Length: 501
Image 1 (tube, rainbow, N blue to C red):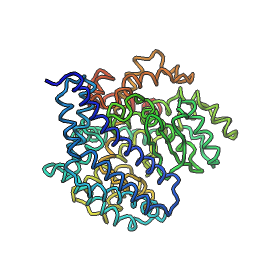
Image 2 (image 1 turned 135 degrees about the horizontal axis):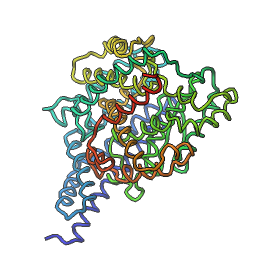
Image 3 (image 1 turned 180 degrees about the horizontal axis):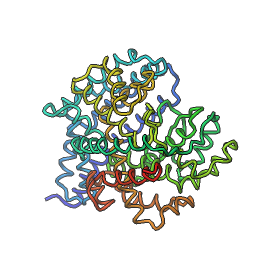
């Protein structure tokens, strides 16, 4: 019989091996950040080779025989619940990775790195045909990847599990279908309403001053600058570790509100990352649960906090200070502006809370058809525009504001988009629980006292890392199974009041 010391050593050896992999992937993340934010345009050939080498090294360490032996030994040990959860997560990654050849991992990494500047150029020149060949290659590579993992299931289902491994694609389909069924009548009712919400942020706004305002917002919400930074990127994103969680945004001269809300969205991602336990860094217990939970944090802060009336009561003085020409804007004006429903907006990241999910349904349907071979890449612009017209009543004027607007496909991230809606639904469920647990939450927000909210999220979500599966984490945090009820009740009540429905 193994001694306690032997069992502890087996678990520690497994974690040591995993930590090496985690650190390599963290380094690759910084290289990816650099490529999107500040790498010289000519740096792609070297960067793609660097990222490919790191991906191959990480994959080889994860799939080597010694890792399998370490897993077997750890699984035979007498583990605590936390330790067993860490082993469960490493086992899942190991089982998937061992089915995929290293050469394929390298090819995917190299192709995605090379695809990024192609996508940027295609978007800038409004020319989908420039991006189409690399998109076709990425689709082929990701199909191959999915087939290697499980040839007996639909490829898109396998890919979706890279981003949400525990809720299941059937859950995503069910949630998206319910959102489409119940939000469309609400969107239609808003469109028929005679109420005209305030729109005080029309005009041109200096990008440098906008940056000062977004920094004010990050300060106000409690961003830890010692462990983060703010930069610009063509498509806003956040990345990093608990020790270094960075955010990016973008500034448009005529859309001050867009930069602010996208920054708050990325803050939500970063504050989750910064809230992970320091002492568990390098293990699954120090990693975010998955993209559904990650998106719940960004949508939580963007929508339930950043679009709330208490927040604007707090933040309008900052707006007036940075932009004196907006001195007459009231908190109510700003609240209404932040929640206007624009059913003629073709851009996802600028969408309101209601129409946003039609953007997700559109992308979900298109990328699933692409992966399953039911749609040719050349048909994407036409199908995209047709669906946009069907779901939102607007037809993009260009591919840049249509099928080229998102960065995800250049990353090979097929299966990612549904997590945005899953995250939005979960955000409402989490906020309802936080509101019940924290006395006068609106008052705390209006006073700029975000400590209780950070503490609640850390205690109920962040500190657990990957200890729980997604359904178990949701039940631990809210006391209930995952449901869209809270989100639909929230949107119905909020927009019913705003538009006098």
